Length: 161
Image (cartoon, rainbow, N blue to C red):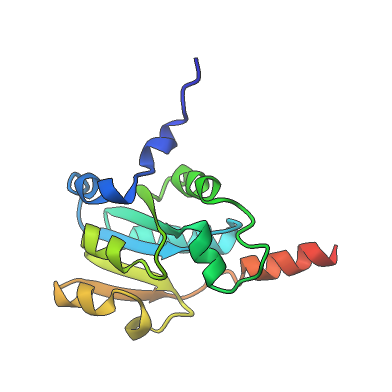
């Protein structure tokens, strides 16, 4: 009999997000992204995001959503289920969900985080959900990059090899 790894319980459908968030400790941190090929920059960023609160929700772009971002015809490399499993396996991540829309705004509204974060390439005022989170008394942070890594750069290196 196959028993799924415990981390798979961290993956939640968008329809169940609000219910699952209700039992989490606050302050609640929310972030989102493609996380196509998980690398040191991602895990460092996620650990820093988690350190800002008691729980971290990560919303991953659906495969179609990634394709609409114009990152290339061969993206994402890893399908959504694989990307979410990797994210859920990280100790710093409390719950993982996804969004198929162009932005994660609906997931932000679903879980009403106390803290919204994105990577250092995002000015705070441009982060999707900024107005909503600030409006209910939360805070928004752009976390500086510690390790300059990118999936796009990794893909280019792989292609050259």
